[in-house]
Each structure stands twice: as C-alpha cells, then as structure tokens.
Image (tube, rainbow, N blue to C red; front, top):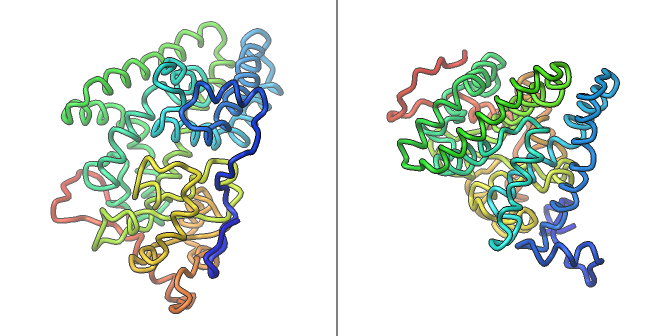
Length: 356
C-alpha cells in the first residue's frame, strides 16, 4: 500500500525479498529481472494444467472436461496469461544468452489461450504503441462512438476479419518486414494446427484452439476499447487524454497492474511494478491533463458500463485526483460523455462507418 495523503493505492508494488528459495535462485540465473519471477511460476503452472487437459480431450473427449478446460482458460487464467505475454513482449523475460526460452510463452503456451504466435507482438509492439490510438493505429477507437454497442460490434468484426491483412500491409509499408514474416508464420501455423487437428478430433480442436481464439480476441478488443474509450478530441495523441487508469482493483493483482494504461502509454517499457508509484509521483500532471482514473473496477467493467450507457455507475468509480477541485456527479458524467464522442481529425481519412 502506498499513498500521497489524498490517494491510497493498494495495487502491487515490488518488495525485495531478503532471501530467495532454491527454486527462485535457480531461475534468477536465467531471467533479466527478479521482479518477473511470478511469470516463471505462472508459466510452469499453465504448462502443468493445459497441455494435459488438452491431451485428455483429444484422447477421450468429454464435454464435462471441456467445460472445466474453458472455465479455467477464460475465467481464471486468460487475463494473467495475456498480460504476462504483454509484459514479456515489452521486456524480454530471459537473458539474451537464453533468449530461445522467450519463445515458450508465445509459441508453446499462447495457442492454448487463442494467441497465434507472434501476432500479438506484431500488433501491439510494432503497430499499436508507435501509432498510439491515432489515425494509423489499426485498433484505433477514435472514429467510433465509444458508448455504442453497434460501434463496438463494427470495431470487433473489422478487427477479427480484416486486421491480419491490414497489419501485414502496415508492417510492409513501415519496413518492419522481419516482424511481418514472423507474424505470417505464426498465424499460418495456428491455422494449420486448427485445420490439421480438426481431422483428428474436431470437438477437442474447437474447445482448445478455435473457441479460445475467438474469445481471446473479443476480450482483447473489449479491453482496448475501454482503455482508449475516453479520448480528448483536442489532444488525441496525449496518453493522459487518450487512455485511462484503473486502480485498487483485484484485476491489477491478478494481471500485473494492467489497469495503469496511461502510465504504460506514457512509457511503454515501464516495469509493471512501477505503475502505482508513477501515478503518485506525477499526480500534478494527471490533474493538469484532466486524466481519467477509476477505482475498484477494471477495463471489462468499464466496457460493460459503456455498452449499457451507465455513466452514473462510472461516475461512482471516478477518482477525484485534485482535492482542491472536487467535481460534481453531473460534471463527471459530462466529461465522460464528451470524451466518448467520435473523432474525425482533418487528417483522418477512413472508410469506417461511424456508429450512431
């Protein structure tokens, strides 16, 4: 727990251990940062759970086992895995000498969670962060009304059916061809597994590869939608004004402080344990930029409240950053509604249909 006297944050921060056990000492020789030991523990746990369950489904398919598989995958481990993938994409887990082991998370574990190898890296690291939700960002939320079910549906369908082709074209134009080829190989490998294993056992392939792909991409787009839902049209490239932060939520403890999206876009390789302190250290900037911070809710909840147009619920979780300028509920709702309107800059040329 850390505090500046006005705001108290209960999200995880790094506390150095006085003594590591034998397991931890072994892996500390191979990884770049001791703060990332939890990723080693999670990776081992996932390898102990999902490959055996998947093998069981292929050998003797049972819908009860399939239900357990999907429950563990979607409800328990999807968030922690994707955010582990996210953090290790920004900051390599293993030292350069052992860099081959960095392939375990995207290539070995990733497919069990619907993550085609290399696609996440190509989209998030090579495209999303450089473009920062602006015009060339293939996942930009700007042209949509961000409290619209129809808007989100169009957004998701375009991502699901067209983004791989668009991303390949983007990477080619930006001369990031090695990343493009890795993405293509990873995507084709995943498709090949889906097709080939469907002949072995279609029901098992549906549960272990096809449904996870759909669900993971749906949840990632819902998350990105919420992360970039409240954009200031006067400064859409400003991370304090095009992203949000969610604090003091169980999600941050489970998913490596993913709620701190402003901090993450302000400095993409900031370690996940540093986000809470960064918020307190730069609170004057957050106040000046009128950054939007919520507490006790996560991005999925923000997305759901927007789909329901429940601005009053969002206002209840809005964090008053400035103790000298307390907003009324009506002022908070007005600010949030203003930030969800479609944005079409003079430079913005697009064929997207704006949600009404």
